[in-house]
Amino acid sequence: MCEIITTALMAAFAGGGATAAGATATAATAGAGLANIGTLLAIGGTLYQGISANQAAKQNVALIEQQKKTEAQLTAVKDQRERLRFASSISQQSAELAGRGVNLNSPTAVLLGQTAAQEMAFNSQSIRSGGQARQGELTGEQLITSSRGRNALLKGGFSAAGSFLTKAPDMWPALGA
Image 1 (cartoon, rainbow, N blue to C red):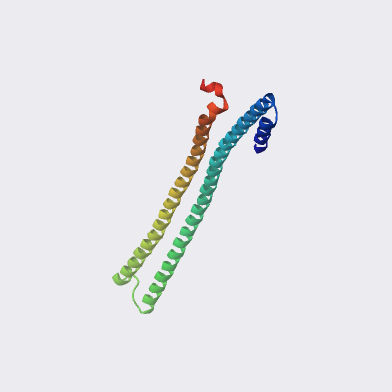
Image 2: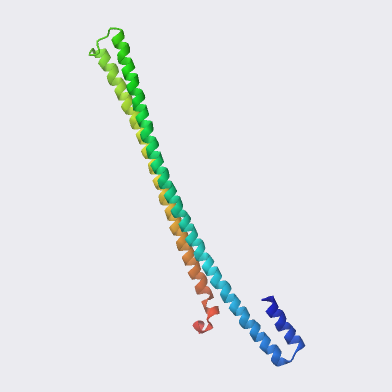
């Protein structure tokens, strides 16, 4: 662009009026064309940025979905292990009571068994509730990430449209008339 302007200036100072007028017109036309190309590239860049942000958000949503599955598996394993640990403790407690000569149908033995079973159920429920809470957090994170991607896509589209509408009268002067 500088070359065109330099050529136009040199022609204006060095040559005749007709040559200078032609060079000036050529420079103005070339400048307008380059401005139009710049505007189109800016519009394209804004659209591309919005599309890229939306695609990145979609990838993050997929990663969060995988994390949700992993968290659900971990919660199930943790719950199962806790139940096995309690079942082992209950069996050991029953063996100790029987070893001491306590009848396993006695009220004391039954109460101890019920208490241990209630504790096992409470711990299991606590683990499952924690897992469900984590699933809820991840689902919320997915929704936010997806929303941000859509917003970036819309922002890119609206920004490109705004740039186009702002520059349209300069690109096509007949529209302004």
